[in-house]
Image (cartoon, rainbow, N blue to C red):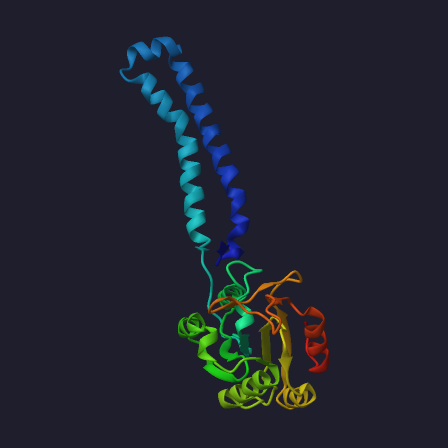
Amino acid sequence: MQFANTHLLWMLIAIPLLYALGRHQLKQREAALKVLAEPTLLEQLVRGAPEAKRQRRLRPALVTLSGALLLFALLRPQWGFEWKEGARQGVDIILALDVSQSMLAADLAPNRLTRAKREVVDLLNSLRGDRVGLVSFAGTAYVESPLTLDYGAFKVFLGSLRPELLPVPGTNIEGAIVESIRAFERGAPARGADGKVRSRALILITDGEDFEGNFDHAAELAEEASVQIYVYGIGTAEGAPIPAENGYKRDKEGRVVISKLNEGALQQLAADTGGLY
């Protein structure tokens, strides 16, 4: 709360003075009545004298309260907030999500892909006025949602992602980076109308399982497009089997394949592309 007429705050000193004046007048009146008769005799002679006495004693407080409320109104108290125009250039964010078969491993409950989707939704809920786009990738990459401010539509595309939609196996991270940069370029020029470089962030979410690609080329493209790359690893070092049609994925010797978070490789990927892990 604030006051519009702060120059009237000095009048606050009148509140205690008003009360003191009322008390002084009350004492003078009671002294004058005592001259006429004893208090007990006066109460017997005058009907309603006790009630009148209580009212007289309350009067200074009531007058003071009325004065305080009047002064409060004169100060013009104000609540709420004031809208002011301000310039803010939002960030463009592309989320490139690994939807390869290994993302169904359940070392993170219920599985890596579902956990990654939840992390993305948490990120969306924290954004204000930033455009987001979605790229899915496995052996190939595909733009699921162009840059948009419609977070609701983005969540629909995100929720529909599953490995069988991208049948080419693998983890083509170079393809994901290239496709993401194309999505940035379709959304807006690298510089805004004011000539300033528009902030761009590419968030790669992957378990790092068997990834492939020419990262030097991808890093050059990202630098030219003013894109900052962030690599987010999903999974655990202990890993888990990869669900398949008839149980779990097996190698050529028939052993169950355990998919593990390849954190070292992802850190190297971030370094090679000038990004952060």
